Image (cartoon, rainbow, N blue to C red; front, side, top):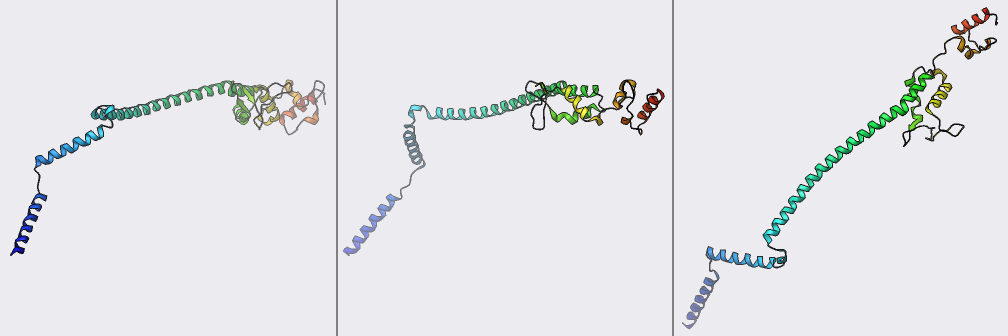
Length: 221
């Protein structure tokens, strides 16, 4: 009987403990607990940065800084775009200027000289000798060799465009127009003041045959 009473007493105590362990909280109590926890955490973390000011103000400053960075990036992109456009326009102006200088200082003098020295096609002559000419940093024309070195004459002067075109046509006579068969130009086939050198005549050439006939008629042969 005594044993049964002890067991009953022990069972009653355990039930009381379980009742206390499973105690429930109301919503207000939960809210109050969460508010206290939040307040404690804010105090814990804000105490480290309290010298910097209010956390909300810091957050606003950070957000504004990020926005300023984005705005700067956009403005920088626009600036670089405008800068590239200006640089491109500048390059085009420089190229246009260089083309004008090249046309005035190089191409035109070459064509003019080739025409004066009776080139069959002055434009063709310009195309053939163009790689042997260049404009230096001062905008002056230089005659160069295959290695890109400036060519000089016997007097140590830089060869001019005019003299270069003349010598080139003399070395390449097939690019020169035939000389008209007049009295002033007959020396090209050996016609001197005294008599015609018939050894230099090409009797297959009608002009030379005419010269031969005239010389024979005048008694020079």
